[in-house]
Length: 126
Image (tube, rainbow, N blue to C red; front, side, top):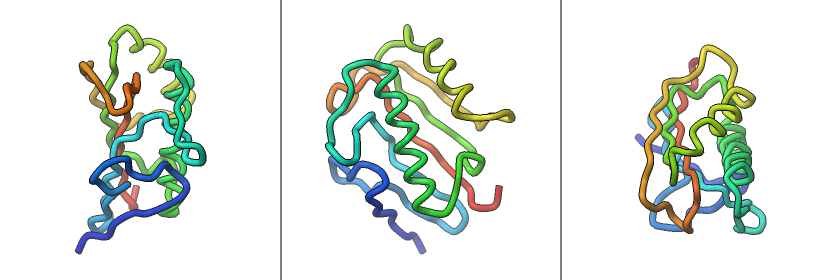
C-alpha cells in the first residue's frame, strides 16, 4: 500500500503530484525547486535556490521522522552544468561521507524557471 506525504515543512505541490510517496520502508520524494514554503517565492541566484532546496528536503525528511542519513539516492537537474562545482561545494556541507548515490544532468528548463531541482529517495532502515 502506498501512502502520500502532505506536510507544511516543504512547499506544496505546484502541479499534479504529491510531495512524496511511501512504499513500505522506501520513500520517494518529488523534486524540489528553491521555493520558500511560507512565501512560495524563490531566490534569483543558484546558491540561494540550492540552499532553500536543501532546507525543503530537510523538512520533507523531518515530516517522516528521518534525517539526511536516510537518503540513499539523489537526482539533480541543473539549468547549467557551469553550476556543477558550486553544487559540489554545497553538497559537501550538506552530506557527510559516505555520500548517497547521485545522478546530475543539465536540462533546458525547470518549473518556474528554477536553476536547480533535486529529488531524493530515502530508506527508513538505513
